[in-house]
Length: 256
Image: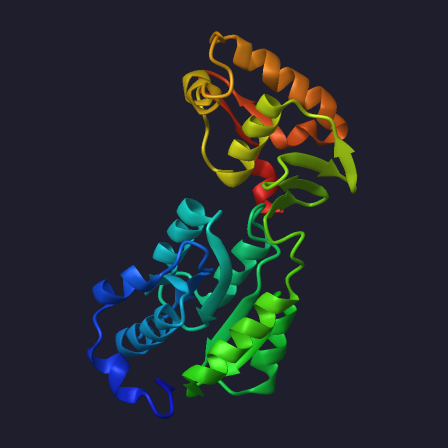
């Protein structure tokens, strides 16, 4: 359970559907994994009142699905350690191995107060460890502290290991060196990095880049991907051909 001073009644009676309209376009998105309905509802409502967008999962399977479906939207994760199916520790490991989310702040929430649990959580890659019951304003302060630490230059980057995509400037960097991609090559790379578990057919990729190139043919996709791989050099292994299906991020590297 969470607590807040001076404004406890507001959160009890506000419905989540009323709060969504308050979320601004620039709002940071928080993945909240909390299986206690009352606690999760209270924290989600509170954060939305503070202009955060919240993706709330009550169990591990839903959390992993949100990670795959909304990876490019998530800025920070709050994980209760004790949740069904996949616990907070497993979810944290998944985030730290994810090509899009590996750098986001992760906060653990737990009723367990043993020092060994806190050390284990931090060793798994958590950035902060908050013990329940925790005040809502304290949680908000911890969130703001973690978001301030994120490099403004890297807040809009997608990455795997030492390959980075800057989604604002539409550029790729490998080992901090700029890779000279055409705009279409960049769009294909970003598509794969944003959705690393999806295999895209030529038609899918063609549709994604059609607005940029009005007159291209199905097999032109193969040429773009071939050129992209050449420019990525040793890192071309991150892009895989799935025979009979199409192209996508090499899933073998998601397990590392």
